Length: 331
Ligand code: ADP
Image (cartoon, rainbow, N blue to C red; front, side):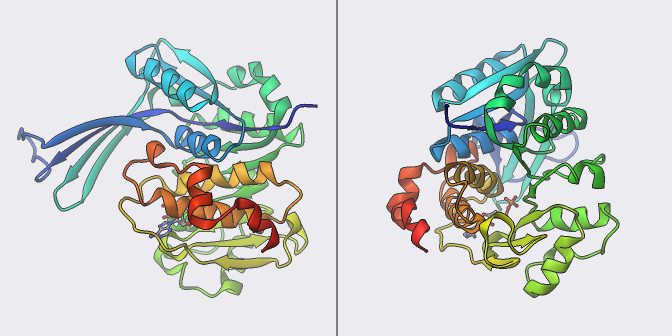
């Protein structure tokens, strides 16, 4: 029997970024200092993070019949990702316009384009990938019907379902969360999810300072068996519905962030979710904690390089910095 794969169903966006002294006012034209274009989209970033950690990774996404879509195919192939593209002639590949001021402030416009036209029928036509999957990872940059279909296809096969609830979608509700085994919100997504599920109203920036028992109580309100909340420079927090869940000794715990020479935190959450899934696939019989420690390390390393997909560390980078990943097994 062949080893199970990681399956990412998500978005591809082409990022177009300009550096300028200051953002233009209405009606004004300014010269930029530098321009760069790069692959982005939470789905693609997470697929790259996952495959670079050594997991056989498949990616399902929608692109337009355009140059950016052609670029997406090449990049996925270069990374060794088994990508299945729904090509939409009726819309463009997703794109993001990013204006970065000298002060570091940025302004971003995202047009999700083809990502919003990914169809449940296309996912059903990829049934063989769901048959082969050990873990499914989804985000919220696609048509919500497609995301729901991916979760259902995985659920009916007993595949572990991980949702990175980013960015929080209007249609995200308790029913969608009820289809997930693990969610990985950052602080603002955690606060929004609490609101959506009719729970507490909390200020996102107060979450990381709350004590662990309080965070656990809040996380339990989401109705998902395991919550892995990322807390930026404060690391992450894990909350299980059941003390024995996923091999962990404790129902809730916190892991401090690794020390990092931070250059750019864009995509840190994507590095975390992609690496978490790769580690879950590699050591399915190990406590969840091992996979979370690995994800926390990868996310820290991703902040030491500029960009998102291109900044994802490789397994060798993690081993060079932190020692053999097998040493986690002894921790
Ligand atoms: P997002 O990028 O989705 O907003 P976070 O800001 O919570 O997500 O960051 C995700 C993860 O990246 C954190 O849980 C942590 O592992 C890592 N991380 C983020 N910022 C830092 C930092 N300054 N130093 C070390 N690790 C960091």
